[in-house]
Image (tube, rainbow, N blue to C red):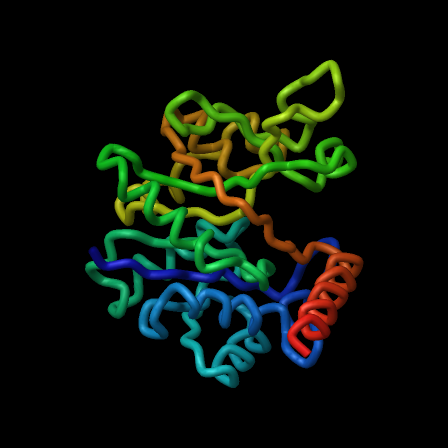
Length: 250
């Protein structure tokens, strides 16, 4: 089974422009994401899909492989689909991991869980991961995406709203979605051409497009969440976490 991990990386971000090149204790967010990915994948399995010269130059500086893509893509999934479709080195790849460039602390176990749950179901075309959500503030935050599953580990829905409703406030099994996806190659190329769906547009969550078009998404439950860098405040949180880790090691 040939597997590749692709990191879609654009420079512009509405809430934090240039965030992938922002530094935390001497390393950029993107560099830390690349290093985390290399904990689970070999260098020849890892590619960064970008449309920005600054990103591409940095990728080369840290010894990774960049693939140039069209700047008009609206999301990372479309960007990696183009990269997979046109890159000779990715011919024959059967499973494509879509890792967001702003997840610098993604764990090897999390990456493995996403791949394993897709491989466990021959009929599954796509997978993702979620972690237990224990903080009430995060549960009610629109910046934290929640998900609910059926009894077979398939996603029923994803939302920025509190999900599911619980009269006591925080449900005992609330789940936070982590923006990591695995696709079977054929479905990835098909998915990128599906029209945007109403709920996808309303929630601004691209994974809802798959659900609305009738496809299942397998969800692996992992124990630890990861810090996604969406705002300068998130970068500050990352720095504090790294400083604490460094102090514990020291």
